[in-house]
Image (cartoon, rainbow, N blue to C red; front, side, top):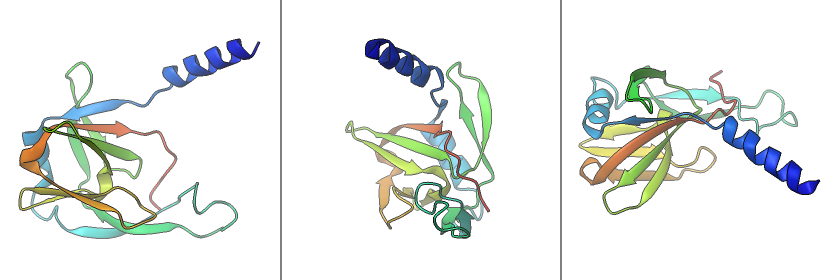
Length: 148
């Protein structure tokens, strides 16, 4: 009985997996270096895991980029526009084989360097030279974060 439950749970997890898109590095650089994109604005989100119902009215504030949407490719190579949102996460694949995960709405490109946040709760930031990036994936994580 337990084996069947585990099997069904595994199938359920796989069937509702999050969509992942790719962005060619050159396209990403062009889209992220439009005039004013390096500017950040303060945003506020409802953060269900940290500021839960035990702290009503408390939201998480952080600095976000000003990009409205980004053109990406789905698994069939079809162009799709993703609206910027706190639930978008990026996987950066470097040429040396390392992978880094950043929140898309925290990412900016300055002087050919990608800068972004690894965490919203702590000030953990990462800087990666654009020339070191092999592949960029953006995933709609399906989390319930929304801008307030």
